[in-house]
Length: 223
Image 1 (cartoon, helix red, strand yellow):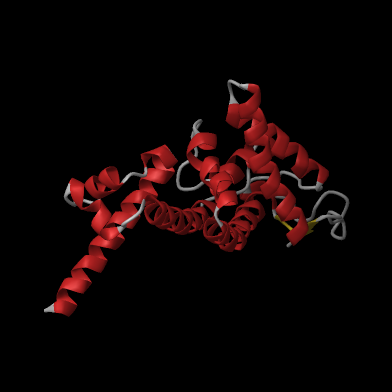
Image 2 (cartoon, rainbow, N blue to C red; image 1 turned 60 degrees about the vertical axis):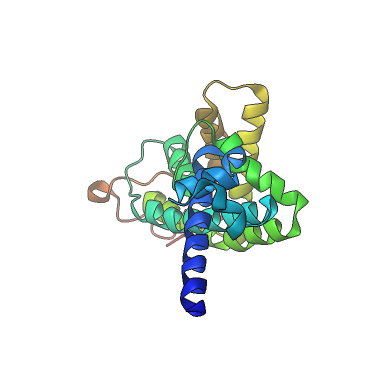
């Protein structure tokens, strides 16, 4: 009987953690409360503290769940990418959608980047964020390869990921009306400097890159 109760308790805790992760992604850190997470999980509103005694424990569970969901969703979005994008700016927008999967919106700074900034004050949160970065980098390279036929080396991918976050924060600080567009243009510039080029649609893609079969970018790795 005790084992059954423990199993049920663990299942409810997992439901609440998943609900907290979804709240974090959709609305940001302020939405992650015991009451809201419990209600979203279909549990009694006052039961949240039983499954997560402190706000800190609940938030850590939310961040871990959100990063798991983010990585899984990023891979799905990346696999849906294809050639034929009109410009590096449109490629950049799709890369942003991969990086902030499953949901990229105009509130991306407050809802998605703020938890990453908060991780700087908590070593456990830092570790959660850090451990998911290789998965996100892999998804970005899959999407990039599908759109351009190229991938980035490790250090260049780190630069791209840093640019995504930094350009959003800078644009937010400046009060840019079109924050995503502002960030996409900055990312596109980095892609251009890394010698990434837009690929033609599959039916019209040339057999070889411009300049002949041996012409390959210096920092981007053609496959």
